[in-house]
Every structure is written in C-alpha cells, then in structure tokens.
Length: 333
Image (cartoon, rainbow, N blue to C red):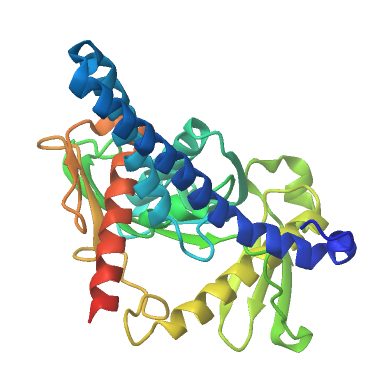
C-alpha cells in the first residue's frame, strides 16, 4: 500500500485492502493483548510483595480476560469473506399468510440487529403478500464483518405461536428460509459471459408508489447454465435495480463455486432443504411456552421479545464457536 503506484489499478487496490482488513483485525488486538499480559505479569510480581495492589491486579485481570474473549471471537471470523458486507434473503415457506408474516418479523429482526451494530441496511428486493407480510425480501447489510456474523443465520427458521389470522386462535407453525451471501463486488472479479445471462424487466409494484406500478423498473437476471436468478425492484431507477440484481447474482455464483470445492466435506448448496418440518436451524416457540432454541448449538433463551428485537449476538457467537470446532476436528483427521 505504500508503493507510489498502489492506486494505479483501483480494482486490485480494493482487493488488497479487503484482504488486509481481517489480518489487521487479528494482528493489532493480538499485539495489544500480548502487551497487556506482560503488564499483568509485572503487576503480579509487585502484588506478591505488596498486598494493597491486589484490587488493581484483579481489575487488570478482568480486562485481560475480556480482551481474550474478544480476540477469540475475532479469530473465529477468519474466513476469506468474513469481513465483507452481506446480502440477506428471507423467503416465506410452509404456512401461507402465517409464514409471510413470520418472514416480515425476521426482516425486522435483522434490521434491528444491524442498527444495533451500526450497519447500514437497504432493502434491494421485496415481494409483499396480499394479505399480510412478505413472500420474500433481500437486504443489503453494509459494515465490517457483516457477512462473518450473519452467516450463522443461514437456514430454516421455525415459529410456533397462536395465529393472529385465525379467528379460532389456534396454534400454528410457520417456516421461513434465510440465505446469507458475502458481497464480493469490488473484491473479486466474476466473469459472466453475456450469452449466459437472461435479463427481464417487470413492474415493481409494492411500496414504491405510482411510478413503480406504471414503469418496468424491476430487473431480474437469470444465469442460464445454473438457473440461478437475482432480482431487484425497490429502486425507482431501473439502472440501480439492474446493478443491484447483477451484483447479487455474482455473489450467488461465487458462493456456489466456493461450496463446490468443499462438496466432499459438506454439501450445502444445490440441495436446498425443504422449508418445512425437520429442516430448521432454530425454533422460536411463543406458545404454549416461550423459548428460542438453536438446533445446532443447543443455545436457548426465554427472552423471546428481546431476540425478536434483534438481540441475537448470543446465537451468533455460539455458532462461530460451533463452526470453529467442526473445522478443527475436520483438519485434525
């Protein structure tokens, strides 16, 4: 970066900066932690001779322990794209209007979580349900390590509650699927042949007002060899919807190639789980009792409303530990 010609190739420069971010996130805290441990060691020797220093030693030990916990979390965010922005897509599953309402609740949950962490959130695609809720939506979440944190949310989410849409107040089970992709635009160059792309435009509808209803500002790109599709409809400008849809498609294509390389270890893509019973990663039970439990890590909480308001860091941290342990066992074999 110190070379005078560093910015001659802006695209390559951005790639290098992106690679540097996760390295600095580990190296600087490690140096700080190493220095703090040295200070505590010196203070321990002094406290051995002067008992009045014990309270100060306890305080410094507490700070070092907290720094170590933070460092362990940073170390778990060491994937090649963990430092990237994220695309998060929510798709209503089995359950009709109930599921569409549940999908909208999840969208609110992630928007609240992003707000708590100072991330910028933009809805780049939203398909509303006629009665209530959303059939699907895609959020662009921008901020350091947005993807690294949100990767824990990919999978099927199951809700059990008394239906607000049932006049008999019966208990209903609803499902919604969440997909999380890293934003790779500006960090990796994905080549797509023009003949492999199909581009469609459509009337956006939804919350954009009369302009979107009367003009075909929505854009959908389909990658013909794989059948992958991405669309954007929330912008008034077709040009911006076009760019959003194409960037999202590139992220999907990159992820599918990345996961093909890991197919011998763990198949996730190309074998989409059915968004229904038995495939969920997390259960949200509001009736007959209140409990949210992650199926993968076993972490659970009765603070249902807090979670629905975006307090999911406990689940994220547990998943990162779970993932790191799995990776460690795999590499140890």
